Length: 312
Picture 1 (cartoon, rainbow, N blue to C red):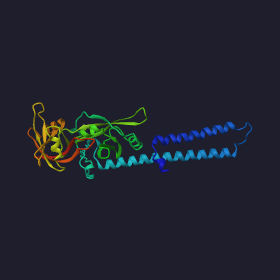
Picture 2 (picture 1 turned 90 degrees about the horizontal axis):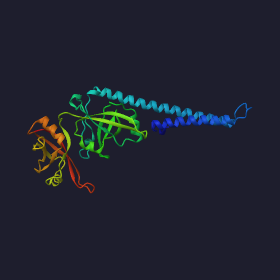
Picture 3 (picture 1 turned 135 degrees about the vertical axis):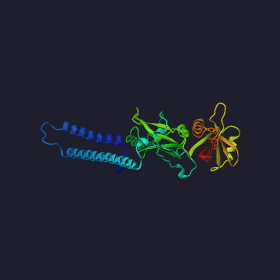
Picture 4 (picture 1 turned 180 degrees about the horizontal axis):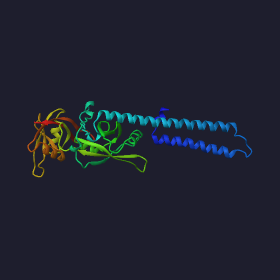
């Protein structure tokens, strides 16, 4: 009956109720067929009723066992998490951005941090691609306020979210691209939509200031021959991130490939503001190129992902 255990909980309930309803309906039909002076029902009808009762009982027992197994698995996971983490309100999540196709680069890094280090107003985001049976079952065990772990899925090119050790959906593409590597994420809302699917919203709290090392991507890569400069770059090339203020953007900074001496692009404005606020004017940081993206038939332009390691 492993196939039965693997069914979605709602499906198991529907099957159990349907079997009992069928048993009751058949008993009613046989009762209506009995003559007024009948002392007992025919033997073949009795066998059918007994078989239906036996099937309904077995299905009910398996449904109860399956539910108990789910509860035990969830309880064990939660207890394990409690033994290995501090109070959930003080847990911060640090996310490694996508690098090259090295398996180790897919692993997330978790750092404990005081919640006071995060913004008080979060971004509320709907998770996507979570309507399959497994994720829907996983969501049914989650609660609002549960911490969310995030790991980059190279098959989907999105960040995969999990709570209490169970996958619950993906962050949308735009949000995945904008993650700066130092966010705290929690479940904000779980609702049943009109199609009887669970919908999950998460709250993303951005960290105040900057924690190094920090993974991000370069922006402004289509200006001033920067496409050619990125194509001439290599993974692991050393880079320098310099504060380069502009009249309209006093926090602006640029990224230079140390090997070629060419400017590859800029740091996105929101992160540049954090760098400026944390390290002050004239800062110089060092890092490396972690990935060069694009350059395919579907996407001609190339992009560049980097890691900022330390202050020079």
